[in-house]
Image (cartoon, rainbow, N blue to C red; front, side, top):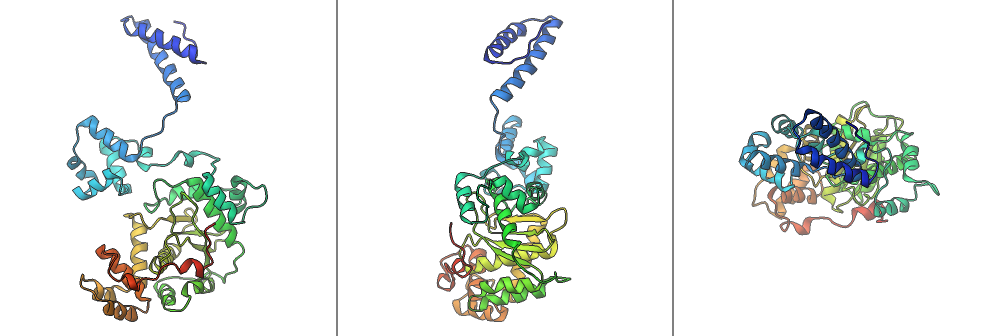
Length: 384
């Protein structure tokens, strides 16, 4: 048996022709030669025609087709029928428990279920052109500095992507341009280096969160967040999101371990701004760790993992304590009642109205109480 490596298209065609002949043979030696040829052909095809890995939903549907499964058969792994439908339609992300169940029972590869883009495994990645243009408009990069050098300067030579992979919760969009996300985090770090803060307060919790929430009632309250946080040892950064990052906010650690809360004001609404600030405040107070110092959030994505549920609940209670929210949690709430509940909670009425709108999926009611289009201007966030 003489088998040659496949080095070009002609070798590949010869190997295919030889394999066709060997398939018809029953000789042991020919079967051995065919097995070696198949390995060489597959290796060449992977190198010459690399394929894009399937999405988690594509992988699930493929396995369903293979095994003749119906959506109801997935309820044991994913939960109720409505949740299965959301998963298969791509409107809901898989939780870690779901991934484990699908991997264990349906033998779907874990890396496919995680949906980790190829960029996570690359040492070098460049943001998409639109994201790169906006990054440069921040005027934080040095002349002729590329994104790799920019990230290295921000993080001291260590890419944050492996760290983000450890804390990649369901609050990150599956379509995220991770190179742009890395660059945005680097920009936050560079800006944070110029901010002076007091030593970190020994314990941050609900008392401090409620004081932050009370700022929502003050004129230009968002502009006072940075000073309030700085007194507790926390850096506050407002920086527009980059195209492809789908970010509302992030919590991370500066090189001197000072925690950072960063917001993008992607949705220029008062209620969204304060919820994001308090959500990230919870991450700073409870979830940042030396081995997981970066958490990023797209709050349009529903999150079912523990830290996101805790951060959501913390932010809700900081803005409107549960005993007060019970008064507002009914479908016939009036505008006057919104103002009364807001006064009791010591927050701006738009925060109560916004929470009611989300809870009852009715964005027409209380539209006049909502504050829109003011936060970016107050924080001097310009669309680059």
